[in-house]
Length: 178
Image 1: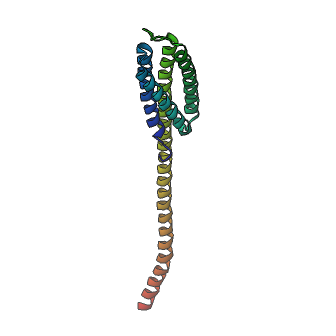
Image 2: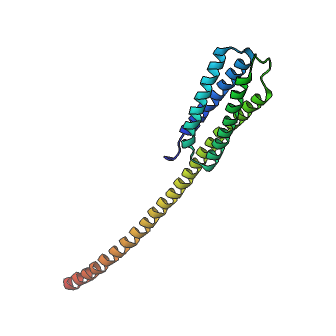
Image 3: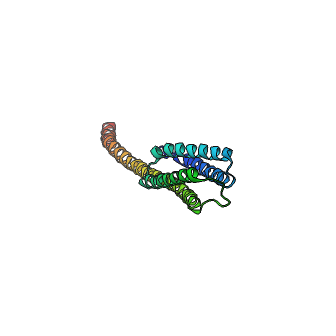
């Protein structure tokens, strides 16, 4: 179990929480045009990027690495599109652009997929650990049984090697006594 690292799972939970905040403040900034919301949105975007960078080296399985890579690609697409939209936006939108909302939906789905991949890796490591534990238990029981059998054989040989001379001594003592 020492190989099980819950850090990737904790970071992926933080990533999902931050993604939710990115979505919330992106929507608010696009709809209201409030510079404070836009500032908060950019701040959470930086946080998301930092968390994503922190998550990448924590991946221990190929599936985790692949899903994190996909999430990074989706994130890069989103940041490019939101930057272009912010530069071209003259007035607030009543409804956020569908393309940006699709990016956010993809990010939500992929962040959940990354979390699931980290969970699967942990479950796999736990199963491997249980299998190794069962194998070690079998080896220990086999060694104990073999030791018991060997000690019985050695005891039998020692008892026979002592018993024969004692019988001879007893017969000799009786012969002298008669």
